[in-house]
Amino acid sequence: MSGRIDVPKKTPQESSTIMDKGHLQSASKE
Image (cartoon, rainbow, N blue to C red; front, side, top):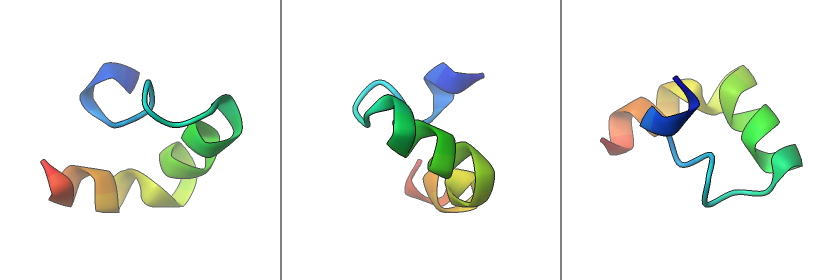
C-alpha cells in the first residue's frame, strides 16, 4: 500500500503526513 505513493522518496515523518492527509494528493499525482 505504501509503495503506491511517494513514501520511499519522502522521509519517515513525511510519509506519515502523506498517508494521513496527503494520500489524496499522492493519488492525483499518479
